[in-house]
Image (tube, rainbow, N blue to C red; front, side, top):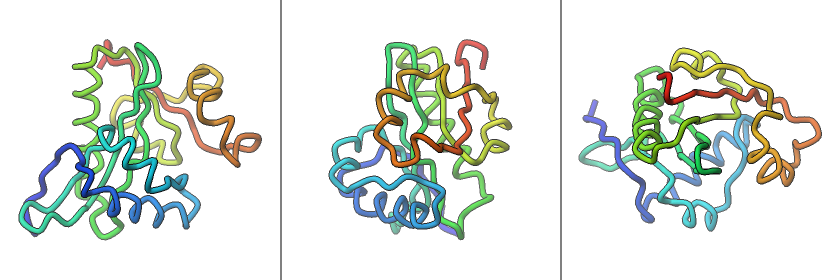
Length: 158
């Protein structure tokens, strides 16, 4: 297997990012993201790519939603590459960025609670995240019947 590098996404990664998001969106486990939104938020993304070929293996975004709070979004690893630590490593890169930004908390809305629990996140009520609920969730088709689990990590304790 070719070595994997973890880096900030570039605008040239946007199409591959959208393709991976749409793959999981079609399965109902991730919200879709339009190409224009991915390009606009490209600086939020970290990618895992094969070093020589540049083939995208995984993605994650750290989206700042308040002066002390950020969200982990769009965490996905291609199916053939799951279980190899790519998701964990990308999340660690995002958490390092969050600490450098002096954020105090990071959260995710997810179905993968075991993954986040292993990395120190705890389940919380979505209502404890009003920035997310009233900023993004209110516009989501699943708003009134959301089944994702809110997970939170306090960075000053990690």
